[in-house]
Length: 161
Image 1: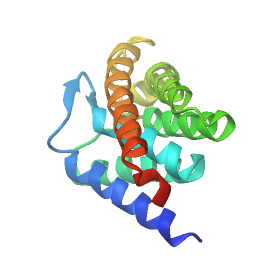
Image 2: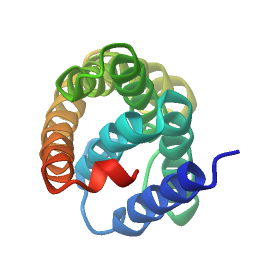
Image 3: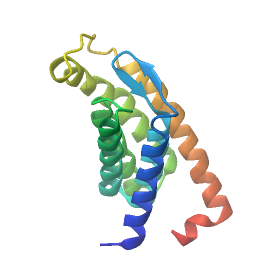
């Protein structure tokens, strides 16, 4: 087990949980949370797909336990984190990782959210209802994440990670 990766993952999860009750926008049954997408991108790039999914799961679980999230956080955040990590591992392109986060959360996660809302949460919604808010949230968060990543590269911080 890599202590640096575990520590970084824990810090990213803590930031996601701590900011969960402050920075969200309610949209129907979901709570749109751009910070999650920033963290998904950064964890996917710095830690890889496995840790990124674990961080996304941890944030979603803790936010649900604390009452600041919804069950819809699970499919969107975890799929986006996985795609961001896989694309970065494969291409070493943070831009493609950003697109992976946006497609994974915004489109795939938005579609997967429908059965979660309909069958688990008992909420009525159209199949594509969550795509637009998830797409907006993941785009904003992933763009911020890419900006933070570029600043970290420029400052030389990434050489120490």
